[in-house]
Length: 324
Image (tube, rainbow, N blue to C red; front, side, top):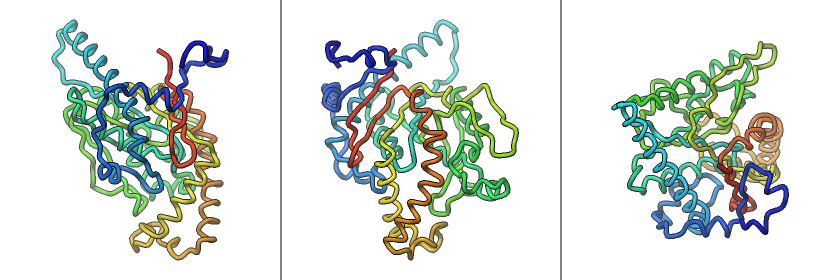
């Protein structure tokens, strides 16, 4: 954005705001390394993304992150030389936050694919924080099943310990795996992370500061937060009404696909009519997801290094990059 185009509020904002066209121009000569078929495999339910979206939004972001990672790698080598330290490399960690149904997962997978094509950081791993939810049996014991996804439903200490191990340079670190089909942690199944160049952490509350305690319990705060381990963070944003529409459409699509599996936790919803499905999705959105968005997720938006704002059709129309 040019200086003459800035309003007083822009000048005092911690972010520089770009239109889609302005941001797209920052791609320069970054090559497109994904095909239509690649993109089809990366996108999520009801989150259609085009090659034009990748070219305009994600290629410039890939270029920016490559420059940041390269600078961090040089700084790390300089520090190693100064300290005569020969410990293993430390992954660059990117956090991606945002509401349920806003398209975080697709953003994370597209970025993972694009970043893995840069020669100086070809190994890019992705971890979702769903694996750090407490198992359903514990949530049921604590009366938190209807608060699943809220900060208190996560084993935050375990997540922080995982990130601390990653940042300490351990060769191999493992984390629990989650199944959206059975809506629970998979027992005895682990995702193994072995010193990637970049690690992407995706989850609704990854930018959370202090956790709120559940009703009736003493509030416990920690001096260490998940976001403390991030080198760069992204918040995927959209208007509440837009996200609600995407959530309802996704629910209707799941009703006809994974919900029809007898092993699905939500199999009971597979026989709902269109009207009943919309009503059920509306209730879940208002009573759980909207509440979590307003109380816990939206307030963390200002902590992100980059904010991607979406409009109709999941297209990004505004980008905010935190000033250095």
